[in-house]
Length: 428
Image (cartoon, rainbow, N blue to C red):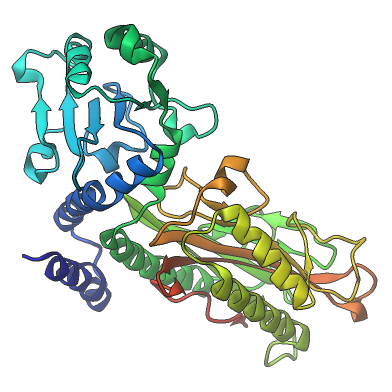
């Protein structure tokens, strides 16, 4: 089956069919999709990532009984995964030591030295890694340790010492942190991941619908609702996932997510609880939604492939300020700002693996997260917050809504693999 046909089949199987049948994804189908994603990432993402980071070899050590976030990406729960750039358009892939037998089925690896060839558990790789590396003679060797990126810091101290000793002086001095390689590899996406994102995004939308539907005004508490659920009052005081009982006049936000294995998709929804006598959203609630849609369009037009997250943040700040808004670097109403201006906060972080927020178009997080470039098919949470002053309520009083939609950057710009928040829901 060709790559295009395989993707079309995946879309039909994973997205359209489950939506029509309302059935969860078949575990066997999901496992097969994960294998295809793994192979595609090795084929299309890995060569670019290694060359962008000027690395000839990437060694990733996973100790038995100590699985880490890259386990689904690499396809095994333990072993020494070695990727070598030997020229051409393909990276050589090898596993030394123990690894998941499923790797044999994927044809993803070229060399696979398993337990039945003389290794017991994780022992043994240190006896062959030195010769293995010397034969390939890499000039820069990326190893999975990092001071900044927890996703890249999976090697144990014991294995690090074993690796450095096994590589001997000539190659040990060529070892560098794999944080750039790992960060770029995880953030690099293939089409299969976009398909999973769309499927899980639609599942999340259905989940949010169910959570809103079960709200009973004056009875339901925030703790009764699944997800990250919060209400902010006119002074900005927040109740979050606690025993607060929803009251008339509240604006409620529900953030939720669904996923498994290699991808998790997020979505947010906003609702307003009608007061007695109200039949529709009040003017201030309609107005804040209008502002939110202006900001959504500003973001959509200005987020592009190839820029760093930090450069993109600067562009967005200027764009919202040019549009008459006040950019707020924190998600809290700034009482010292122009009282006539609606305040905007950004945290457009990566989406897919819960523990990997980078690249991050945000003032939050480490500088390394803003230094990363936005790759093609970058999947991210379209997260921003809107604080709108309401002068008739009094000085400093305001209304607040938040967004947590899923988006992807294609060559055309920002696109939606599943519908973003479609409007403020009316809760009667």
